[in-house]
Image (cartoon, rainbow, N blue to C red; front, side, top):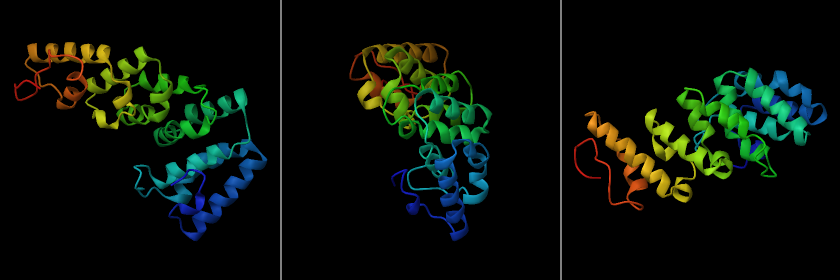
Length: 211
């Protein structure tokens, strides 16, 4: 479902009318997004969508896409919505960054970095979507993957691994696996596919078999 296609959201007539009105208001005056953004869940609900988002997240992405702002003004408005939002609002911002930064400048990377310094797994997952995969420098991306392993976030929730996994990430994960094994702790099995293509010194799985 394209973020720009409000008609494809499963909304009640009342919710659709609210969203259409909100989009029109934001297009005229971007400041109106400040009260409308947090109100999206109340008006649109939070039913799950096939793409893994919830209806309110998709509605909030549409509100962000409607902002008639560019450059630093856009960064400032989106950053403020993230800073003052609750975790659900922050997740919506993070998951919409690819669409909000339509020019692909990477100008919102500070929001990703700030999230990765935190300890909310749901926000970390949201931050490590396609936007981070496209724009995080290699060393920061590797550290983010390693943090997911430490935080027990399944690696299939991290975007870009098929393309961005490299020998250095394999080395870091192998070192982690050896430390865990030496401490008698289990090694997450989902790191093995990232290690095998780059090294024969594979980590040990939780069943004490070579991965």
